[in-house]
Image 1 (cartoon, rainbow, N blue to C red):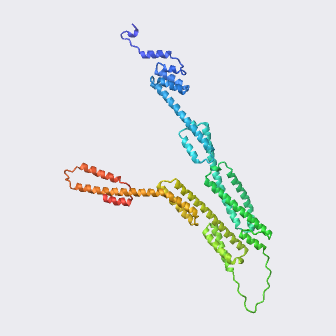
Image 2: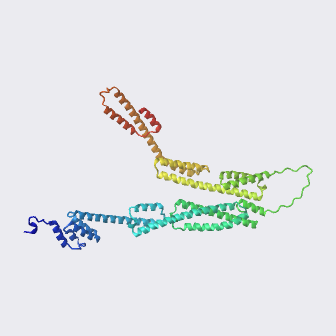
Image 3: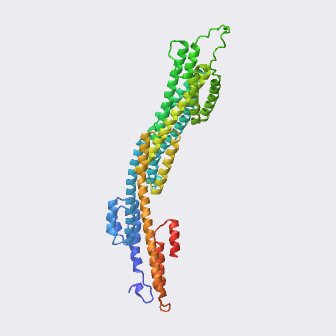
Length: 500
């Protein structure tokens, strides 16, 4: 008889005995042998062996084969293997997605017209992935996008500074155009130096790698302003050279600038010969000649008003004073001093230039309004927002009309775009009116139904009335009234009084 079979002896634990003996016989290293994991005599030993085997990062097919062998034997080990496969699948999907995002980011880096919206788009796609997961190529591409956007910001600041410098220089050129000839010659030396600096700045901006990525409107406005300013400068410079040549050569052509031409004429005119005092005519007093002193005084006063209006930017007042000066010149130009004639002609020319500039700028603004109206026509907003946007565009157009009549072609284009863009709003309003009419008719019908029901209930005996059914019917009426549809406040208040 075995010792543990004697009376009073404790029976040994067969499972513990087998496990301890199996542990003693189990090899220490089985990581590279999936068959040993399958053959492990206990779950604990299998889990330890499985952990060491997975630490070696086995290929996916071997993990799938081991899962197929263990899924009916050991649920815990099968769960570990499934989690490993799921993690591997997730990692592979992430790698594929990151590879696609890398290609997309590299495309954006090479895109000539990269915008901040592109960066926002790629950042939204990268949000599920931590930066540590990004491949090096993706990190480099995203950094390149950031650098390009930073360069665009710096370029926009450079363009704004250049626009301000160009505007100041253009104002100085205009002032030189209204100055006397000698002063204009002196000012043109400094203006020529500034023009060379601005031209270099324009060339520098155009040579920037991020210049094509600037907003098209900004590029067009900058290029148009620079081209117009330099063209006006060249015309004025050529006219000044013509005036200087005309001073030196009496046969040379006069400048187009009226003030400078008047100075040249005064310079060329011979000194008047002294006139001997005539003896009084016995036949009577000489005929009276017209005195133009009042015209000169009026012109001096008007030119002061005109120059002040130009300095303050009041174009309408300036045009009114310029018209008055033109009339005075046509009547008494010969009696005006040369300096006054030069001032008048320069101020009138500056007024005309300012009016032409305003017409050009107004046409540009009207062109922008046409583009906005066409955008609303092609991609409508929500009906209420669409109506507000169209109303604002028409108000802006009316405000521009105060500066002068619009071009007929632009007006037809703008009006056609606004009319087409307003069609969805009109359809929405018509639909709302139809729905409100239906809601009002339904509510009136409900009121009539309630009155008929109330009249039918009035003849019943309260003792035999089913008050629960009455309450249920009233709740039904109230629910139908609450869901009767939207009505304007005034009409709803009137119906509400009848309902109550």
